[in-house]
Length: 184
Image (cartoon, rainbow, N blue to C red):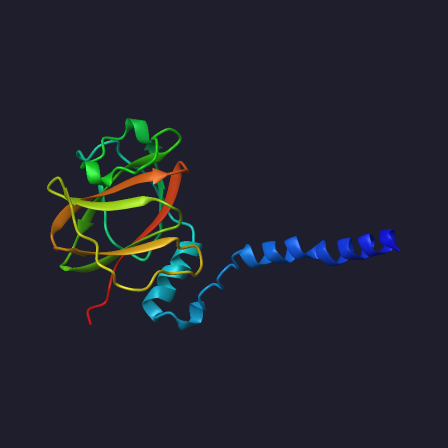
């Protein structure tokens, strides 16, 4: 009788660790329903699915042609982060710079307003004005829709140019979309 009770105990107790482990797993949160987004955000999500203009990031904020905000995606070829002269210590990613990419893109702003910079992958984004990062503004909840990983807002002045500093990318390229938010 003893072997049968041992087998029975084993059969009863064996599933317990599996059930306990299942309780420890984190379920993936369902993606946000894209149809619930504002028309402006739906346009941003849709634009990230289209092909874009390919540009090269610069290693430092020097002279270069500028891009303007538009509804067209930019496909930015980044540089090895070791070749990039980041502005300000607070903008450097906390990781070792090996196998990371970044660079600068000059941004021309036609008129005052709030501008959204959306990225298709994990990167660190700063907008630099006269050698200093501009404070970000939360303009919408984090997007969990389409190809957008991050979307940040920046209050920018018209008829000025800024430097978009990109760092911490694990990929040698990044998809960006820079749009003006509608005035409310």
